[in-house]
Length: 139
Image (cartoon, rainbow, N blue to C red):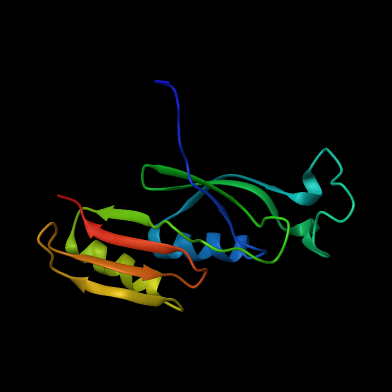
């Protein structure tokens, strides 16, 4: 199992393009590969895609810092990010504060950035896509 790799795969319910742009601005995400449903060489079974999803993202691979994530619009207009958060560790307090503020735009702060016993800055936010983030200064 030494070659096993676990990567988050996020479904954005039709808002993947918007999410990618948001994460590009907020935390410096960069797209490595993107394919739309209309580019799929295999026809989708009838009724699988919501109407108008042909232009939506079937698969994307993107990177934030040294982490590779994957995502999609999914096949419908509902998604929930329950039971997990993404942990974003940054080298300085200023970078952590900037990323936290950017991720908070249109979202909900669950724990404001503050000093903790494990980090000089830590906070929790749910972004406008419903994705939970824990932002911290790496030690």
